[in-house]
Amino acid sequence: MANYSKELTTAIKDVDAHFPGKTSSVPIMKFISAAESNYGQYDPETALSYGPFQIDPIRYYDIAQNPERINQPRLDRANEFLRGKLNNPDFNISNLATYNPETKGYDDVNLDMMRNPYVGATLTRLGLMQDPGDLPEEEGLSEYYQDFWGPRWSQSEDEEFKAGKRAEAQDRYDRIDESMMMDNVTNEQGSEAF
Image (cartoon, rainbow, N blue to C red):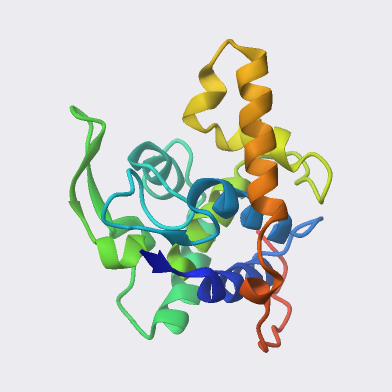
């Protein structure tokens, strides 16, 4: 089982600083990763989606490849940021997988990059930026996660079941060990968001 929790904390903070918004994206990004992968503690070989945020093929396409949804200036900014973080001058967030519209999946996936905490945090932040509304701070995280991130269980018509799943996700977030989130990184504030 992999444990990406310390790298994940640093990546979330760095990505939030690079793509600042009206409110910090740190709480909801930590919530999503806690709900999806127990805050980066998961087996990447058995995971159904990619990385600590469990980016599925449709969400990846929507964030990084769908011409009707992408924001090219944001993708360019993400690529510049990740080229520096990954020390890879040729990195392109839109070329990590080849989408197959017939299967609604990917035929070719760069798993090392899709599992990277920086790539996952950046994709998640770009996805969150597609929502024109405000991000939740500490209150309303589980509802926002259900409504915007749309885990599979959110499609259920059983409200009691969904309430239980929201509570489970909240509990995972509340149990994140503080030592997982500690780092000694001082982040520079990012420039104005697009």
